[in-house]
Image 1: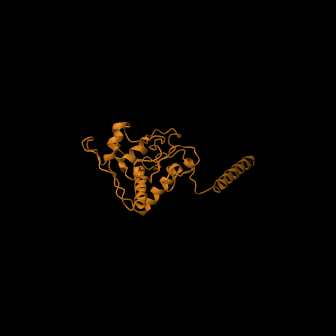
Image 2 (image 1 turned 60 degrees about the vertical axis):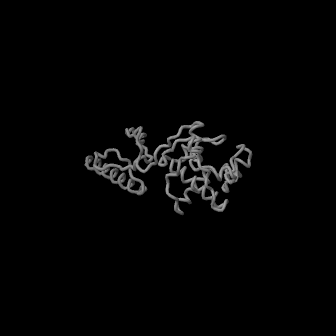
Image 3 (image 1 turned 135 degrees about the vertical axis):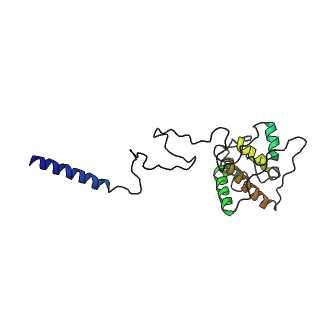
Length: 212
């Protein structure tokens, strides 16, 4: 009789535990503690994950000297005076942005650039008008209307004057997208003429136009 009571109590406890566990959020998968290779949790290449916290060895970055699929070629010019001069010959490797991509470029500009340059690119961003950052570039002036896209990319990548590098905030593709957005806005201001003066071919060797 005593054994039956113990067994009955044990069954009730198990049944209660099963019932309570079924009341959880079904949208959240439970903790996988013993998959036994029954299935694999798929991760997109280079996507953020918590494998490191789980002590799972995984290198999410491309092997040195390689380019991950879908990425642009590395920017070939150094951060020096000569690199800045040569950047005028670097061409945008992206095709013209469609309306959706241009909206994304505008969003990236407003997040990363408008804080200083202003949404209208007239150097009237909150940090500029508040006196937090001196001498903010007015992208609507002739100097920047004529600035080559490659020079803009060089400045965003390495920083220029009071502006620091945005290479860690924006991917190479995103930087080119922002530049297309800037050039589009400049063209609207100048009636569609934002062509830069041709670079002096006697001073600079041709650069790889496929580079970022």
